[in-house]
Length: 441
Ligand SMILES: Cc1ncc(COP(=O)(O)O)c(C=O)c1O
Image 1 (cartoon, rainbow, N blue to C red):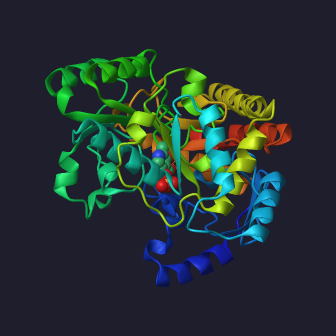
Image 2 (image 1 turned 90 degrees about the vertical axis):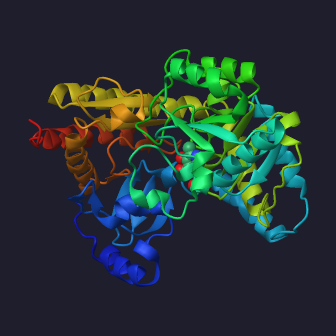
């Protein structure tokens, strides 16, 4: 039976709009909540009240296979018994101290053991905090003030990181001072020549280069062969701190993040999301000499025992043999199934990414290498096909972020049966989407 009743969701949205700006506590949630995607209306759930394993339940009693997975944190499955039991034990012992606890040392040791760049670690609450501290430490260490970022990468909602050169909507810049903007240089992704030419003139003014090693905030763009290796070399040549934002990749593409799977080691790396399987914890890890520059970090709730317990239990589970292999097997089965379905239906779409996290982009391009390609005028008409595709998926009980090119996540609780069902439903959804005549055709 198709899912079509979102009555209670709509009623709650009415109430929420009266007391919360735009009805959301994070604008990253507004694609589902607004009921409009790329200007097209979509019927979707807006409020949820239960999550277990690979499934989420909305307030109207509909249930879904969840590929949104909290926007990335859920790696073991929702309400994982091992994680929740350990958190409960901690809750019985103590809430918090405003002082050090034993388990935070244990967790830091685990991160140092698993993450190649980690000589030292600090435990924070959000990815935004971890990236912001990384940039501050890089500035303090180098005595320089400018930072290179890349188009389409997302590093959190703080002033330094939000401004982009590309047209992502004026509201993104509201309230951000020009001075902060001037400290940021934003370059296209995957163009090493351009970075080299830029650094020839300005290399001695740059404190840090920060990037998402796989751009999961923009069509799951992979680094071109040699690009990150080139960034690693050139940052060393100019004494620039290389920061990997591993908030999505960390503990998701592998236990030690992108750097341990792909072998390019940054100076500093920010972690969040999957490090805590749904609990609000983040970490900044990196070289001792940079982490101990006396840049100030505070945070009443940093290394909060409940979250530290969740993270310890999560990493302990992830260390068990076979967990990542299972997640990748499921993800790669779905990727293959989606690609076959795309070929069979003849729709213009591609799938990029890796087994644990990937994105479908509706486009006539065969590959997307940077933000400009993802948003070129010829791609925009395809957005309507994404809306039709995701509408069909929701109706049949598969939940994703509904935007064109947004990531799908896989967790250890997804089953082989769910993978097959997802492929079957996606094939039907591609067929419906293919029927939409693009305005440029
Ligand atoms: C790559 C990346 N970095 C940083 C952040 C910000 O993390 P948080 O929302 O925990 O502040 C996000 C959030 O989606 C992200 O995707």
